[in-house]
Amino acid sequence: MRLAGTWSVRAVVLTVLALVALRLVCAALTPLTFDEAYYWTWSKHLAGGYYDHPPLVAVVIRLGAMIAGDTELGVRLASILLVLPMSFAVYRTTMLLFGSAHAAASAAVFLNVTLMVAAGTVIVTPDAPLMAASSFVLLFLAELLVSGRGAWWLAVGAAVGAALLSKYTALFFGPVILIWLLTVPELRRWLRTPWPYLGGLVALAIFSPVIIWNAEHHWVSFAKQFGRARVDQFTLRYIVELIPTQIAFATPPVFALAAMGLFALSKRGEGTRAARVLINATVWTLTLYFVWHSLHGRVEANWFGPIYPALAIAAAVASDVARWQPCGRNFADACRRWALPVGVGMFVALVVQVNTGVLSAYRRDASVRSVGVGVRELAAGIEALRDKNGARCVLAQGYGVTSWLRFYLPEGTCVAQHFERIRWINAPPPDADQLAGRLLFVDDGSSNWPPVAHSFNQVEKIATLERKRGPLTIETFAINVVAEPKGDVLAPLPVELR
Image (cartoon, rainbow, N blue to C red; front, side):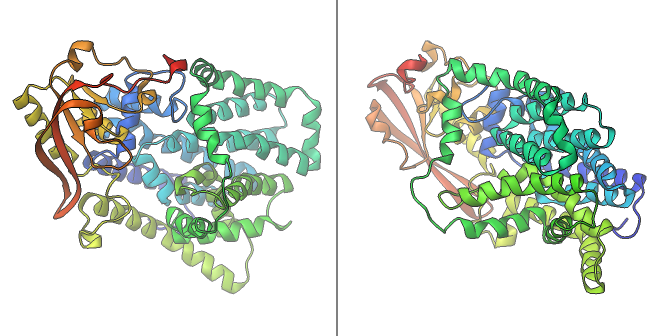
């Protein structure tokens, strides 16, 4: 099957299922990133919120692990399967807004070939449920537009609430919807009805567990995430990263089509005004904020996840709806033909690289520290040393190594982070007897933490272990046996959270 001419529903379904199958295989073969292992620990203690994010990613992981166990595939399974309802929502939204089965089919496939969706559902993060919820926000707004039935506002509120349970970035749907209503004259009547406000109450009710959790924990998660908006100084060093990273995450053919589609949607000829404004408002509201944010801080590529359903629709508009001059038509057709092979090729190359490093001739790359290649072997070495030295618990400095060891060490092994207790506030601390006597301290050599001798009177280095990817040594860990803590074995929580 190729992305040219007319795609049938059957062809789209088979293509999406084939891509899902490929991702499931890659998910089973690729070690967890440290963030995935961290979110997996959340799934063992479900709560209304966590230090870093709202709780939906933990629920997604819990559901997958219930099916496939505490394995790499189990952690990622439900996240990967979210692409199925996401694809349906994008297909249906495109049909409603632009009335083209060809464009709807293209939009569903374009969404799936982006690295944002392909890699962003294999590597499970809050972005996967956020993108799924975002696609349904668009779908329910399109249903509202076509049907004129106010009850769809309740569904919009539910989708926004689910997005908020995924990531705080979903707050931007508020201004997106308001811009849509104010910009399209025939939609302003909704502001004089109770329906949008009832939808807002539905979203608030769904999001309320996160608010309650933050209120009970001195607003620590809100403070951490919303603190990113604070401006300390301005710089141009980050803004130059935005376009190259999004070209990569969208893949060049889909990015080019999306840019063409957004241009076409800025004119009157393509679709209704309401359809054009909805797609543009969804894309540009968040994009303009991140452009501003990049003037004082780095914008991670995955932060753009909520706009990708709209970008896929814009790309489909360029491919199947917009009218182009011959040169533009030829370029759009070429992008459409190459979207699938380029997207699959980039995804496979990425998976091969993060697992082997062969494409960079085994040199370091951006993924080498975050993906847990070599962690299973590292954990086996640590477990052997723990058993040999009679250590009751393994301590680590950062949350990433702590999370990896909790996942890869034998089930039931005591593993704790010596610092940052706030990250584990939803989980019970280790028993006192587990923290008594000899402990194994894994020192990653990071300058972010005080030396181990600052915390223990007895420190004996017993080994040095390496984490490797092929011939490349990624990290070196000093393994110490420690005893006689100078204070609490685990750094205490802030007074207000005890």
